[in-house]
Image (cartoon, rainbow, N blue to C red; front, top):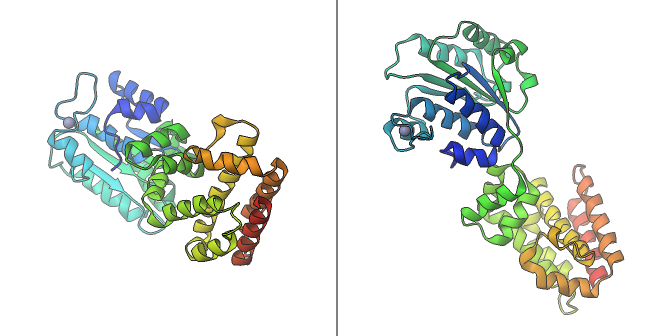
Length: 335
Ligand SMILES: [Zn+2]
């Protein structure tokens, strides 16, 4: 589970969503069904579990936070509380039987006291039968049963399901918050600065930071620029040495190219003295050294070629050749 276990932490990432859910709890007007809509990596599931903790916590704190330490809070965090059901797609779809099983569970006396909460992850994957079955359940809500549907697109759900639910929007998480989270988790400052420029999905950002392969691509970008103006070393040869890990698949190529583009943009921003926009802050000396030698025109022209290649990555081009060319162009410009 994600690190969120308090509304005051959630408020930092999703202030509006936190406020709406808390207001419901404080005014004792909790909706029987919520839809959390937002892109991937915006803490929707963590928030649903936090909501469940708040409803089942045995000793909520004075500020209405779940305590996080009682047996209910802990079991919810570990996904072992019998009153909290999480439904995930079985393959591509969420099928009717999965929803029927859920409803069957509710029809039985619960093993433990207290409200029961079901969470449907990627609810847009419910097929027609599953949606209709769920709708029937929602039309006759049982007391003390709460639904939280998570989705990237509420328009893909049955309108009649949406109209019976409180819709809460989750926004992409701001760059500085992703950066702060990575730093808190011990990710080095360089990677913590660069990764949020690549993704605003907090889970993906963490995965990238944990990936040895991707972090080694970041190192390669730094190395390539470090030798970019050295006549004794060749960027083209150095690139060939590391190209296996870069040309693995379109994701690794895209990551490498994006990091190169960010570096190239840094050079341009430094030329223009837009210092607050520099991403590779820890490489400032290196950036200064290169910009002192290379013209703005050259920096711009290579940047344009990189951006053009990024568009072409979607097509089935000869990647190895295209990358060799761009590195050669870069090297020619730098010397
Ligand atoms: Zn608790």
